[in-house]
Every structure is written in structure tokens, then in C-alpha cells.
Length: 252
Image (cartoon, rainbow, N blue to C red):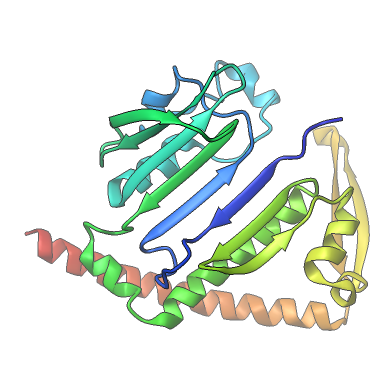
């Protein structure tokens, strides 16, 4: 029987800065090999590919060399990791270039914990963007929505999102997609979804999907949410451009 992976996303107890002071992400995966540690925070680096054939066996998402490198440039990053071959875990601190500045033993078990503190410490204009509580809440909701999607895509994944002492979202491992839809979306919404499967002969595969029944409340909500999302993205882009201009003027 395969081991259930646990992904826990935790914001620190006692803070109300919605991740600006600290963000911590932990899992009980395979950990990072010691030989990969010096490179895992470097841009464009990944240990997932050793050749073109690796595309056929890729089972995980994202690349450490993008996310961690970006985090290092705007926060203080510490990575604690341990593989099953390691006698003890190790804790590594990184500078803004993704270079190891300190390392020490850690008591944590097999897996990886990434902690970033003081987000946007060197970008005061960007940090100012999150001065209003509504913007903080909006981003926290986006994180929750993203984890809900992860939970649906990976039914056997256990996920917990915590802000301070409050658990905002939690999903236990489920045996299949139908079960996780009932757990995450609720019975009312899940019962308004219909299962569809479409074979794609040219790709030698098939697409499996749960779609809203035509005319249901879920279908109308989806259209309304799409319109709202488009408006929000347009507003965010305008704000980002303004922030970039202000940061450029500050750096002159």
C-alpha cells in the first residue's frame, strides 16, 4: 500500500499579517538529496529531469528553482529536509541569491519544510499593496482555492491550511475523485455535477471530468465567478503596473 502524502500549509500562530511575517509549508515526501541542496534555490534548476525520457515519468508539479529562487529574493528562507537515507535532517538558510549561508542538524522527520519570513522585506512598495486587510483576505482566499484544486486533483492527499490558530481548510485522504468532491465542495454542489469521459485516440489517452449539469445553480455561479475573476485580474494588473513604476522610481 502506498504511503499517503501529507501537505500542510501553516501561517504562524499569533500573527495577523496573512503570511507577510511568516509562511510555512511542510510535507512528508521523499526530501531533498544533499547533493541537490546547493542548487534547489537557484533559478531554472530542477532535479526532475536527467534527459528527455524524464518527461514520460514526471509525477510531481512545479520546479523548486523557480518558486524558491523567487522567495529567496524577497524574504528570509529556511529549508529543513531529510531523506530516508539521512541519519538526521538538516536545516539550511539562504541569502537573496539562493546561496546557503548556514546549515545545522534538525530533528524533523523525512520530508521537507520550507519557511519564509518577512515577505517583501526589501520591496516596501509591494508590501504597501497589502496594507489593507481586504487585499490580504483576497490573497488568502486564492490560496485556499488553489489548495482545494490540489485536493481534488490528488484525492489521497491530506491538506491543512491554517492562519494563526484558525484552520481555514482541511481535507482528509479520499479513495476517489467523487468522494473528495463531496468532502470539499459539499453534497449539494457535488450532486449537481455529472461525470464525463472522452477518449482521445490521437493522444492515446482520455479526459475524465465532472461538469455542472446545464442550467444548474452551479453552472450560473461558475459564469458569474468567471466574470468577477476577470474584473479582479484586470484590477490586479493595473495595480501591479503602478507598483512597478513606483519601485522603479525608488531605485533610481
